[in-house]
Image (tube, rainbow, N blue to C red; front, side):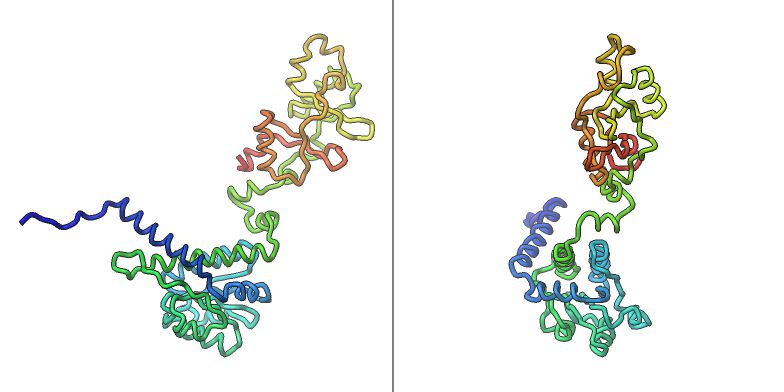
Length: 324
């Protein structure tokens, strides 16, 4: 007899099925957010200590990520492995903390000692599980109940959909706490000084050359002397300043080329470009780079609120810092 079995799905088909199933689970979670979510945010905001995240297996892996996200966004947190907790790590949990315990079934035996410890010492427990009648959720002070959705695994056993919902709910908690705390980019940079993120969140003040490096000239300075200042400072520009120190204009290589006729008989003020593009020290370095790219320039003068030059920023400074 001919083989009439359905052909096995392709890898792309299998992937789409998993993603569609997990997307439906997230839709269900968003539509029916755990009733205790807002109370959880309030509890964490009023916690003097840290958020201790615990779990084992795949829930533990997700818990580590949630704890890291909380810690990097203004909510002090660290992860305690539920199994290790029974062998001394319970000492990492103190009276001012709150524990977020994660278990899809809510019956993870490794959590038992931690639950007993928190109950004994009055440490609030936030349970995250899809089983509201489980041991964990009955012991919990607040409950983040996940909707019961099938796992994306063909056998329905490997944690897939459930861990996706846990991760997404952890992100939702972290973001809600960020907004409640008024957590801004300046705070974010404090926790992310390294790598690409740190570079992109640098301020102009972090990268600019200070006043000693400024090629300052007066408007009546003859061009031969102005050229010497430009060459000595090495930025290819001269900042023309008034008697009170306010910026009046800028002399660039382009200005020199446009005024080659009788250049040496002129003064800096006569050939300077008036109202040059400037930035203040508090501007993000990434924004300064965008301004350079938009205007096709390689140097920006940095001024204070009164228009007095404070420093100079070259595109090479941004490139070396990894902003680009």
